[in-house]
Structure formats: structure tokens, C-alpha cells
Image 1 (cartoon, one colour):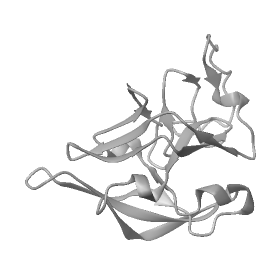
Image 2 (spheres, rainbow, N blue to C red):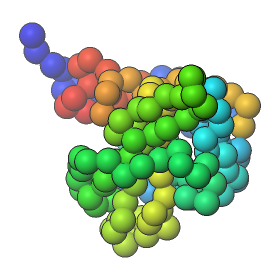
Image 3 (spheres, helix red, strand yellow):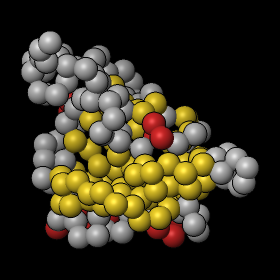
Image 4 (tube, rainbow, N blue to C red):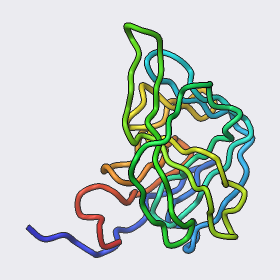
Length: 173
């Protein structure tokens, strides 16, 4: 089995869309005034219009929520960490949503940065959620599609086009 490192041609971009292949490398951070919501266990556990998104070549945006806009008790610090060459060392959270008997706990289903790099200082203490591990995530009223694969946490909406890194054969992009 071989993995292709050949970058595919970008998908066509329609009106009101952005290509992830036009996003920069190194990535950039920008504020988002659109409504962002996360649902787990049938409950809205995060809801903001004060988020940030990270834009990086070949990735759909990752969205970061201010801690004040996450429901009390919905996240607990978890073991585990990873390192991003651009943002720094990330830590993980278990995410808890819903009421008993419907409560769900998703281990290591969100992440954040205690000491991000200077370029990403604005997301210090903010939290990003893996859409694939939640009941649903929304940008405005659109339910997002999770970025392919298990490592990256991008949120795909109608206004971003790929192809997206994370699926089979995309490791070398």
C-alpha cells in the first residue's frame, strides 16, 4: 500500500466560496462573528459569536470558542497533548453533554493552548471541538461535515471547497 504525496488539483470555487488551497501556510487566525454551536448529548454545550478560525492550506477551518461561551461542566482537562509547529503545544479536553440518562462523555474530543505562539495569542484558553465526536456542530444554521480522518478537526461548510487533507492518500500534501 502506498500513499500518494501528489497534491490534487483544487476543486472549482463557486460564488461565495473559498478554496482551502488559497489559505496560507503558515496558517493565519481571524475572528469570526458567525454563530458557532456545538451539541453533545442532545444539549448545546458551546455557543458563540466571538470565535476565531484558523485557516491553513488544505484544511477546512478549525473554530475556537472563548471559555465563557462553553457551558459549565462541559469540558474537563484530559491527559494527552500534541504539538503544532505553528500554534505550539496543545492539551486535550474530555467533552461532556446532556443529562442523565442521555449524557455523553467524549474523551480527548476538544483541544486548546495554554501558551500558544505569538501569532496565535488570541486563542490562549480558547477551545476547539472535533466535529466528528459531537452530535452536531453548526456555523450559523448549517450543520458542518467533519474533516476526514481522525487527527485534524476542521469543520467543512458549503462555503469552503477542497479537496481536504486528512483522508486516505493525503498524508504527504
